[in-house]
Length: 159
Image (cartoon, rainbow, N blue to C red; front, side, top):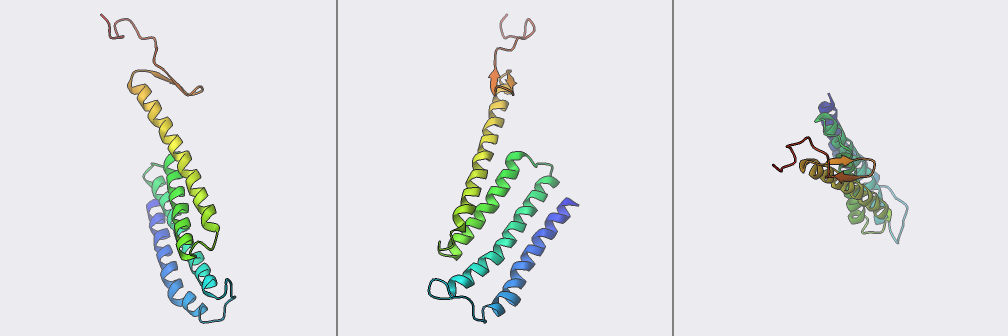
């Protein structure tokens, strides 16, 4: 059912962008709009990218649902999905507004924060994995590998 939900979110997002552009935005832009920065181009571009970043947000939700469906919703995978969603939102905002709408800075900062925390999670996972692979015991309270684990006689590699 989660896969169906993810599919429906993607479908409604595509419909929202396509139908909104075709039937709402084009008609809206025929009307006089507030003039900012010397004309109405900025206003039109702001309304257009705001419309379409809703779809990007929905695609981000679809990614989260898919991660839950495949039972791979780790903290790092969720952070990567969220960071990617905000990164794409920042990029669309930056390009569509020609960097005039400063929300791209906030969306970009959110994306970077998510990726930094995801990287920290991945680094910790790799450290734990390396510790356990080497036969050590990972101390989760102190975040260190205890490689001097006492082993039963005959299992320490010496004769």
